[in-house]
Amino acid sequence: MSMKRRVFIIALFFLILSHSFTQTNNRARKWIDEAKQYIGTPYLYGGMSKNGIDCSGFIHITALNSIQISLPRTTEALYDWVKIIPDAQKEAGDLVFFKTLGSSISHVGLYMGNNQFIHAASSGPNTGVIVSSLSENYWAQSYAGVGRVLEENTLTQNTQTKNTTTSAPKTKSSNQNKKNETQTAKTESSFGFLYNEYIQFEAGISADWSFYNIESIFLSTRGFSAHAFLQTKKFPNNFGLGVDFNYDSFLSVFHIPIYFSLEINPNLKIYTGPVFSLGSARIDEGNNSIDVKAPIYPLFMGISFESDVYNFFGMKGYLFQKINYTYYKTVTNEALSFYNGYRSSLVFKTGLQILL
Image 1 (cartoon, rainbow, N blue to C red):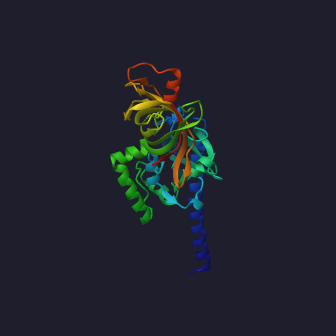
Image 2: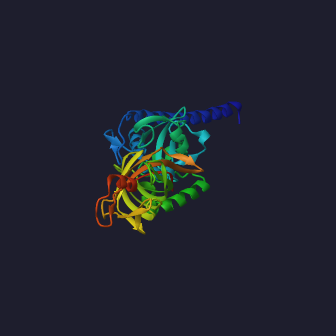
Image 3: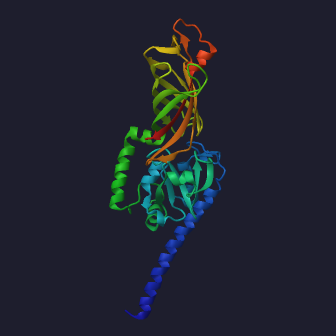
């Protein structure tokens, strides 16, 4: 082969490679430019417009409008679809994934370069479509990895199929295919899908206390509690169902409250429900005592102040401070005095809740 022909083939190879790289870069820039048009859009679960949008809807609609790629509509399906790559190889136009609610993938954003990404946030320091940094504490702690959409074989596949399919790219490694098969099997289970997409299970413990003892108003231990909680995700005022198991040392009784909650904001909940008691509740007054009981409903209500999600011993969770009020009467249905009502009814719970 002559030298001129060799030079020509090498030059042609690099020209094709350069064209492919430029095409990918151009598509990434178009996608990012389209995404920026949504900055300031409020978060809305299920939303797909500038009136309101969620994280996976944001990725789906901006990709479709800018680079004509029809991506899967849910966060977990996106994670299954992309090619997972090492974090050091991430580039503008890749997707970054997060575990903000326990162990499952629950959030996605579009990487812009320089450690920044654009996304539709439902939690964290700010919400709606915003630009954030992967170095921010909230996102750094929940970061799960990066996936690639824009590469030559993916682009070719999407061009050939005119973007009518959302099946996974054919270029995944065998290990990645095994991972996807496992995740897809889990997703195809109706309960598994509902749990990962819409429901979060939590469990926790707390130390219970109040501001009184038998003789005076003073800081006093009240017992301990175990908490189990089922929280919905991606709904307005994410409602929840919880059950506590607690021993009240002041009343010498074991309580099982079952309650319903509403989320006022990501760090504040209110709740109410009935309480079932094992044993007879009794208020000690030195040498005397008063037998008390709770009416059927409402008998248990409260408010929960909650921190952001952090890592605790390799698990994600949050700290909480609850203020509980349980309405009691005497066994003869007489109202308690203000002092005895306060002593028996108001309890503070300080604890840790783990996302499972």
